[in-house]
Image (cartoon, rainbow, N blue to C red):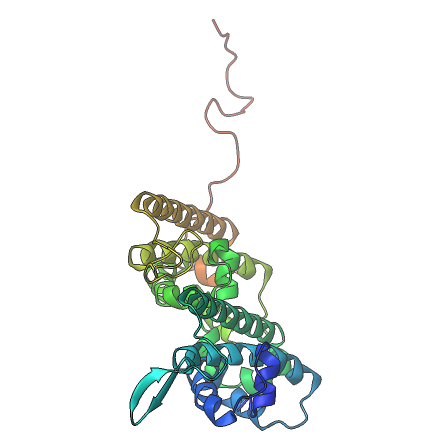
Length: 328
């Protein structure tokens, strides 16, 4: 496990009372590793980090980012059960001597803050790992890396660069990830052509990532197009507030109703318009750039259109053989 004792856990969360027992927290930490950490970094890298006793400088930097994320995920899972006591006699409120039950508004605040911190720390860790992938050959050689990186947009950080309203929210990214995958296949691949699309995916799966300048621009425009297209597809099915955070209900303490219909329709239209505009920019760039040696996969694609030759448009051709004439 990445957190093996109560002292390490306390060091991540802070504000923890002295009396805490490891058996109380271990199930939540283990569960958070299985549900959040391992699916994101893979079994291979997880096993490497869990077994290390003297981490390298790079391993320590990664652990310093992963452990707070793990701690807050575990804390979030534990909160509903720590305010109660369960036994053979049933379920009762847990009120030790000289203490009082927390109020509902405090409970709501704790849950929301823990969820936000877990997401922020986790996305920070994943973003750092992606930028230092060459330091973790166990990760780049794993099936998890191939599956995770084999997408045009593979993380909340990449999505937020193309769609700033995403605010690097992993929770929101996970809600739209399948829409992003569908947009790649149904919206983007017909624009690029199967050969160019497959070539980009293959390069994205390979560490370190090396792209030609033209491929990098195609990737940039592709991400802009599908980021907006996917969110437009997702909007009708997302319960989001004006800060683009996922909400579920009005809790009676902080009223966070979902966006009203008019605002949602405006966002939907804006995303569709931007997706179409970026797609047009992408096709224009491909048609003006592709050649037998530059982006050849698109050059041989049936949708390739050679750019019109430059020259004067309209009027009479500039030919000295033309007779003189006088404008009346």
